[in-house]
Image (cartoon, rainbow, N blue to C red; front, side):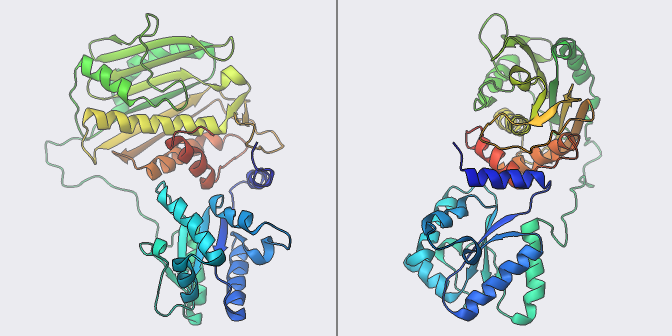
Length: 421
């Protein structure tokens, strides 16, 4: 069973809509002035919409100190007030700072590419950092006159609201005259396979479509190699992979002039029959249509965590596939996901340990589609970000629901590590 207190926190966050970042503040108890300064910082952050966790507020007599420090694992960010005293205690591994250092170091060693630990300098003229933070960028709070500007800088980091947002990536203006950028989804190949797939999946219920291809670079493969690559690229964490390659009579991929095609009818955990249709072209284009996993458990629901897992899986499959086909790094990918048959369904979860909001959230529309561009290969962090970008148009149909980035980090991060949550 999950931790009841963390489940309650998760419920409250979902009720509130966009989630306030939860931040643990780590510091050393070295003087009254220093402790008062940290208290001021934590209070100002709460006024700026940051859910600060501080021992002064959240650790009471009789509480387990070690358990309190383990908030480090469950929060979105950890702000570490690096005074010279803190840096020395961390290096020596002494006291509460030493225990926190052990926990932080363990998390950094299994870092999934998500920035979590933010050092800030205070009472530290020599700018000495603990060993585990020496490669991290810090924010300098040394000068009291700079407090307001540095507080804004920290708050923007915690809310992921940069003062100068990175502009979208444009097309290369220096492509040679013979270079072309292909409109992937204008290709008749996708329309042909979509027509064949929808004749099967639509009559069985709600479904998801995934399609992608390279818009700038060409792949040349042959049928046997393509089948081998498809099988090696599948991800088996969920149990029924996207692009699954079966070796039985009913479901084995077959060859056509352009590549390979699989048509799979299957009954899962219920009497409800699902259909999977996927096609992989010799040039690397991919198309999938499949009935929703939810129909095997609850045909009235959409599971938000399952949608995150399935979308992340499609992105990871794309990465694996193109790595295995030798697509060069930096190639532009067009990627599309479409959900249909969802009107009137409730937003729910497949995991009973994930508490949900008490009111029902029903879809106001029957379908949702999103198309994005990115460069191959996506990093793990990129998979989290693109999953969020692809699913925002779907979740907003459920009474304007928006899942916090920390939820994506949790669900998708665990999936990348081989766990479904």
